Image (cartoon, rainbow, N blue to C red; front, top):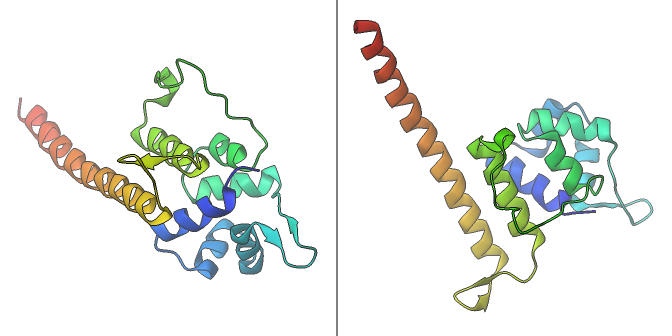
Length: 155
């Protein structure tokens, strides 16, 4: 399994949702979401692997591509190649690309920052900054798109 549990916690935090609120939106029990976020079933201490149907609910609620959560869960294998940084036609959405970057950050245990191993806190700070940048870009994009649309109506 990838790092679904860490990502679930991070995404829920990004959306400012409590465990119960997130579970309700997804359509699963809060205890099951808690188990997914921990990554281990407390009854038998085995790794938890949610069904593709549950992952579909999560991807829809958390507004991320289904393939992304399937990869995090270990259903799909993420393959890197020399041209893995090439943006495909179906990957033009900035938020989709950002999710890929977050996944790469969370999966690589050997990341460094200025030559030193990066701490979890520093990595979370980078991800927070990226999220903030996207939220600000959305506001700017909406503002300028509205102006452009208004100018086109005048013509």
